[in-house]
Image (cartoon, rainbow, N blue to C red):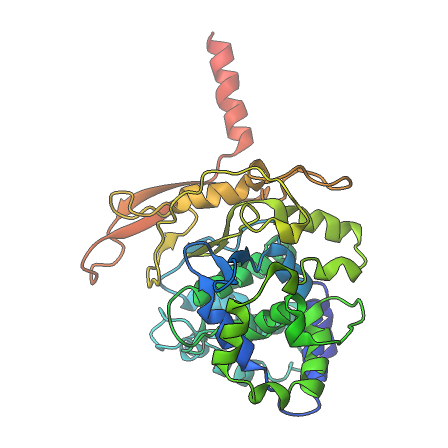
Length: 423
């Protein structure tokens, strides 16, 4: 990676992922898949958390916002990763990646302008930075790296694609305002709960969660208090777990989880970590019983039923709305923050509203030193209303298109002035 591109990425919340290549410099990396497959079997889709100790006295454990924050270092308090999803993506790709029309179409999986980005083609266009590159070229290379990171590691799918609409959120002046950690967690939980026998998500993060929470997996390894934790664990896994866990069958891990007692769990694994004020401010979101969102994918953060891992004994309980969401979806030209479908089939406005007002859904009072002020309101976010329209005649039924309406304060002042003059 060119130094100029690296400097751009270092300005973002994804800067820690620049070190991943160094971690893999020793050779091929093998995750201990036995615990991973067993966790898949004990995941409770309805509760959005793990149900352990079924053969003894069952209890719940969540992979929550606190876990994903310490594992990845990505924000968990801010603006939800969601918004408008476009049907025609060529202009979007050309704008953000500084590509020509034919290059943008080649990068899109269908080649017709309305597909997802083929992640494997990104390195072909952004392998080297031109010698006479402008600042916009450097920024395009930085965005391409983050898109590649999202598509291959943090938000992967089996097709090897990534939605081009993420590009709209990668403006280097605003990228850190979005809760990328919560988006990754929503993706992980959605994959765990889809009922399939195999998963495609940020598996490294899921393994680190297991290593931090279950002593029988990590044994006596003591890690230095360095964040993000996935970087620290990569070296340990590479050195110590390559051969050991391949001999243990998945069925044996499932039995271990089924016979587990509460004292077999590490409830406060992150107490060894020193917290900055930024950490304290971010971690306030872990107490919110709210939906975690990545466009159409919505799951729940569960401090209301998994409060022990937050050091709580008594919590406030809130009514949980039934999540009526699209899973999976190929819908385009809609805004997932407002989408209701025909006959208000889906409740995305309600779920996104809960995230925006997340500090109204705290299960306990915030600890001293943190603030309840919400950081999810973007001053540049326009007021949005939607109207029903047939945006593509080839489709069998119309979809929703969302019309953005900017309310200019100066115009409002003029109208009020005429009103008062008239009165």
